[in-house]
Image (tube, rainbow, N blue to C red):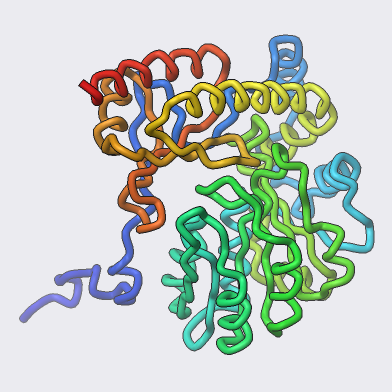
Length: 366
């Protein structure tokens, strides 16, 4: 007689989950890592000692403040978030995107987003067993606005995601289209401002005027990727529902205290952001000097390029062989055919990339 403990336990997993592929992170050991939109700058030396001293004083045997009150107060002060709007914190903004879909997704529900965009919108929809409606961007990465609004009106999605600016294209969607979307659907409209630190453009002021509009941000792109701090701004009635799904103590005490410290010294963090923006101009100028490349404008800390004659995969492999890891977008979506994405690193990292890129394109043209 077969024991009930024997068998393929994977069969217990829902079929839609088994069909998914896990989010892949490329190994980067020994490489200059320019594939994940991380900032090249952390706390400078003068802040390192103050930060570690503060962490030493923390009682890690106790749970963190479940409401992260000090951290929320600093976020409101630094980013000018009105008191009458509610803040929900997450272990990175990814957790907040997941929390939103747990609240309004699921079987029989519809999730909608432009494509290509941040892949987690679709992945989360799939594992909540919601239907995902992806509207392909034009070849120049613009949104076919009439088609988009017509689809919103006819499909009535339960949740719509806009990355603002978009990843991996780097540009903004028309803010009026986002507002019209919120007017046309009774569902939620989530504006994912992960790259706000670099764009400084926000839909936050519309959260007051549009009850179904939510803004999600992260500190990950601003030198703090390792802390995994995301925050969501919404009307209190929505935040109260999300709070029912947020796991208790989801933001650890070390992350909370480190984020408070960083926000208390935000002028120093912002100086790193300004250096990245300056480097973005330099890298964009270099890439634009090649006739066989199209460099797309970017409001984020990365640049996406399309190769007009060389093969993107060949250039990607050549860069990797020369110690530079970038993101190969070529097979991720038809609109991204023959595209690579370059995170903007430090001056030294970018110089190494420039030298390797010149060699790789020179080799490819021979």
